[in-house]
Amino acid sequence: MSDQIKHECGIVMIRLRKPLSYYQDKYGTALYGLTKLQLMMQKIRNRGQDGAGIATIKLDSIPGKRYISRKRSNSSQPLKEIFDHAFNYFNALDEEQIRDSEWLQANIPFTGELLLGHLRYGTHGKNSIENVHPFLRPTNWISRNLVLAGNFNLTNVDELFQELVNFGQYPKEMSDTVTVLEKIGHFLDDEVQRLHTWFKPDGYTNEEINELIFKNLDIQRLLKRASKKFDGGYAMAGLIGHGDAFVMRDPRGIRPAFFYEDEEIVVVCSERPTIQTALNISINDVHEIKPGHALIIKRDGSLSMKPFVDDIPEPKQCSFERIYFSRGTDRDIYLERKKLGSNLVPDILKAVDYDWDHTVFSFVPNTAEFSFYGMIKGLEDALNKEKLKSLKDLGPDAKKKDIERILNQKARVDKIVVKDAKLRTFIADDNSRGDMVSHVYDVTYGIVRNNIDSLVLVDDSIVRGTTLKDSIISIVDRLKPKKIVVVSSAPQIRFPDCYGIDMSKMKEFVAFRALVELLHDNNKEHLLDEVYEKCKQQDKLPKEEIKNYVKNLYDEFSYEEISAKIGELLTPDHINAEVEIIFQTVENLHDACPNHTGDWYFSGNYPTPGGNRVVNKAFMLYMENKDERAY
Image (cartoon, rainbow, N blue to C red; front, side):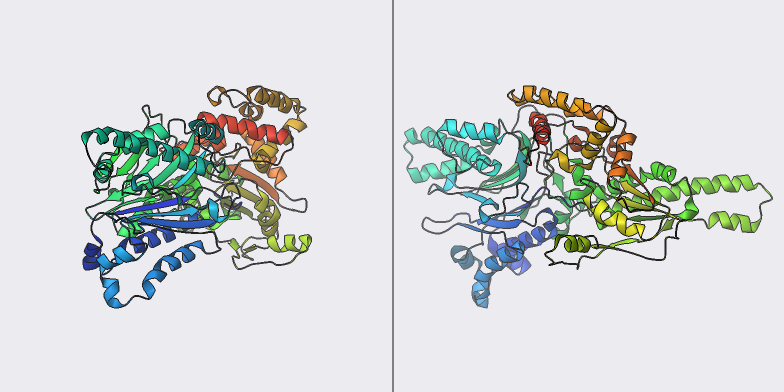
């Protein structure tokens, strides 16, 4: 993505099913769980650079001994800081102590059987240490301690917050993380108290009742009650002080979550290849947590997956995971990204007038590489069809040189744009700094022939278009191409996201800016005011009754008209080459990613009622010229 956007977080949860001595004997270290946690968090560090945190819980601890350890960091190197902190407890130990797993568990932090890690992208711009996961809800009652981390955003925090107030609570802030922590915590307290009240008349001591609570706490019931009004996308992981754990995935499956289990370990992670790499296992051994279900691990290590909603709707998994966010090392994502590239070939060939000899194909940035490979395959297939036709046209008396000329024809594929990751600027002057920023990308000279060749660049998605306009198009224009064709493997991003991706302001979408320009150009700007009034009239309605009227504005123009206007907006005045921008269609997106049909940022079809409220609010803020978030 040439325009960097922040997006959802990453979670890792590990449950060791054997005593630490088992891992010491088999793997040579009692820190097996901690080292696996570190490896997996390193592998999903693409999911968060604003902060990181870990927490561990020891099973079978005795009163008076610390059994929960936690470390969080929002430094420039958060992963290094948290694991330096954790492993520092072991650096001063002698070899005998390091090998004594029972002594380690009894005396040293971060030696628990339950481990939780989190990498954070702060979508709301709050990057203080208080906003870094995991969150802890502490109490002296072991079965009421709750550690929570997640990859989520809820659209109805105000509604959930008011519920907490109605319970008699005084939450310290109105954020989805705190609200979720206290909501689950409230019902955890309630479930524990219910069990205590149930067993007390039978004459059990409080200590004995504790053990009965550990065994009988119904996590499924707890999560059903706590999440009844959740509206959003989420994968939330929770650890309870006595040793139960859970990971719950939203009913639409918007946010991803995968797991693996064997007799030694249970692992949950936001991305499948991370589990494969860390445990050296096959793709077939890793499974998805079903939408609307919770993976529940009891204190005794038993595992189950149970629904926490009664009616599970049609899944709408986030397609942006496939296009950009998740790493392309996942087999299915790799193939889907290639398909996204190949689906663009007909439009690309049309844009360059099928001129193979005078077109150079490349990509920018590196995250578009897999789509580029798919485009190359699509180009090869298209060219082979042309070769076959040309060979047939030669007839039975074809000359060898003519046959060789046809067979030797290839698509011209080269690395044209290179990102200079080392480039930094400390210049205070805005103009000078802007000039430096425009040189973050460099180009390969001498490949594109002056005023003869067209240049095709594949990008994975275009959000604001700022980098294209301020840097990439200007730089490649220095190569003097006849035409520059920028191709987005994602459709036009028209609407805000409200489920964890940092795309919330209408004015930031170049597709929306193009729409507004077209409305003005065609004397239809009054439609903006009409939609604004419709949005205002819905402002106080329950979220379930709100409709997305912003979609109506896009219906005024064709997809191609909006793409053409985007091309105009992103072409700097000084550019000599003709510029055209091509976007994937939503239909071709679904063809490439048939199992991930969540496309609300492209289509405006939000999978939860809160989405319509967010898009209307985002539009009203735009019309009121307020630079605020819609959620």
